[in-house]
Length: 250
Image 1 (tube, rainbow, N blue to C red):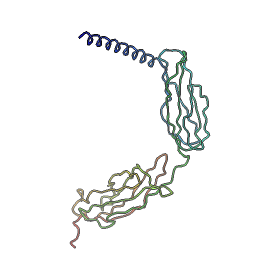
Image 2 (cartoon, rainbow, N blue to C red):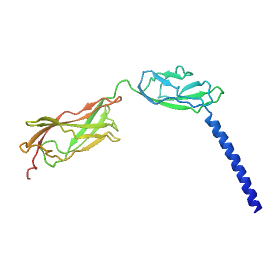
Image 3 (cartoon, rainbow, N blue to C red):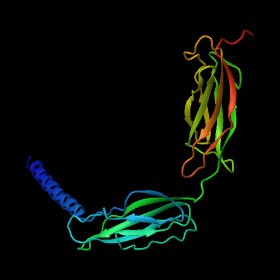
Image 4 (tube, one colour):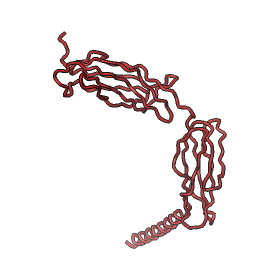
């Protein structure tokens, strides 16, 4: 019983000692300066990137000194930093790709921060040409009530490589006799990892059209709006005759 009590006391003493050491270590860590390299950026290659480390701070007070560095650059890049010991540094990305910039700050006691990283993504000055290809529809003309059209295709670059995770928009304008034109666009889809897409349209319906209107001409096409990397593109317009009646008996 005495041994158990002694062991318990020793264990408690060790725990207290360990707890005190951990607290001391935590307090020490909390006193280190904190580097803030700023938000990630996306820019065009050849443009100047401004880096802002003014969000860094020193819990102990005093003045911070700054040390910026390029931790990683694209292959064959010769980019270099200017004002790398200032809270505002800069560099010009000379190649498309990702540049990883590191910032370490030091306080007046000589304590250094953990490095903080920011990613700078440089894109080529000209956007990549795109094309919508391999377009196939389950029906291309003379649609009737209840018909459901499935359209597939691919978005590719100039070399035929599929472009993933891009929004493809389907456009449709219905030309209704006596009522003019109206937008009946069926929506959009996103390309998969190979640049392919598939759109299942709703079945054809009269959509409240007057009973005396039996035929509508629908003009349809597919669009890709593009972004800061890829150029926009679209297909040719295609017209289809939509009959607001049941399909003829075979």
